[in-house]
Length: 127
Image (cartoon, one colour):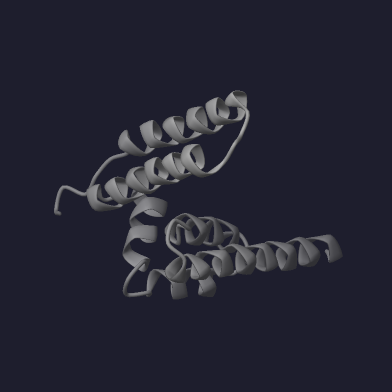
C-alpha cells in the first residue's frame, strides 16, 4: 500500500511540473501551454481528479485540453498555431545556430512528423 501512495504522490508531482512548464508557455512565445497541460491532465487523471477538473475549468485552455483528452479533437486554430510555431522554431534554428547537418535533419524530421500527426487529428465540427 505504501508503494501506491508513493506512486500517486509522484504522479501528482510530475503533473505539477508539467503544469508549471505550461504556465511558462503563457508568457514565453514558442513554448506551448496546451501540450504540457494535457500531460498534466494525463498524470493527474491517475492520481488527482480534482486537479483535472481545475484545468478543464480554465477559461482559455481548458476546453481544448478536455476536447483532446475526451475525444481526440484538436481545433483547426490550434493546429495552425502549433505547426506555424514549429516551422518558425525550425527556421530560427537554421538561421541562428551552426548545428551539424545531421542535427538539423533529425530536428526537422521530428518536427515534420509531429506536424503531420497534428494535422491528421480530428477537428471540432462546431467551430
